[in-house]
Amino acid sequence: MNIEYFIKSTTINPMNTGFVYIIGAGPGDPELITVKGINCLKKCDVVFYDASVESSLAKQAGASAKLIKINETITNNPSLLDELNEQIIKFAKDGKTVGVLQEGDPFIFGLGAEIAREAVNQKIKFAVVPGITSAIAAAAYAGIPLTFRGYSSTLAFATGHTDLNKKYTDVDWEKVACGVSTMVFFMGLDNLDMIVKKLTDNGRDERTPIAIVSCGTTDEQETLSSTIGEIAEMIKEKNIKVKVPAI
Image (cartoon, rainbow, N blue to C red):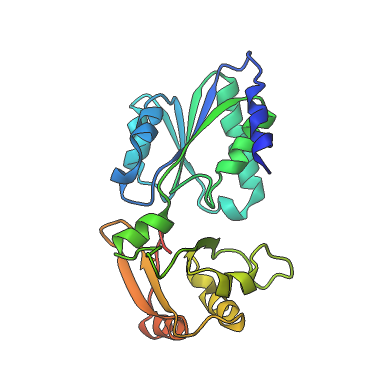
């Protein structure tokens, strides 16, 4: 997928009067949504929102708007994503203004790209409203700078959800382990042992500092700090449960 693909959205069927806003809700704290995000929500007749997004944000669309919570298992279920896209397109073709409210930024490990692609295919007008990703916000709330002059000048994001043992992966662990100063894994606790193994097997020092931030930017935020060589055992000993938004 490239930018030229999305440029095709300029060739819109004028008979389709609906519109789709793909809106970043921010990382958890409802006050971190953008002003533009709120303004676009207020224009919506229908709002689909992530299960992890504060319902108070969806209600910014107004009393008459139809609010629909997105199934939280959708990222692992292609049929649910197809169903969501069908609903969004149907409302848009009926002339409705549709909002899709995604946790964090919709184009960073969200559904934004898939929804935008379907809008292009169906010749539906759409706009993407960026949001603050939890990778940045949760770290900031924990007092952790992701870059620091003289110490860290490179940064990488990766999802911790994918099967890291699969034969083909788009993560080049050799380059990531030693070629990037700061790494942020999204919600990677279930794969923590494998993430640590991939990093250390590819040359990352076991003494490298690590922090796990749970419930980032919310009143329940917790931060656990250790080294990558000791973090997994520490979590097992303390029976720590990490909740989203988490990095």
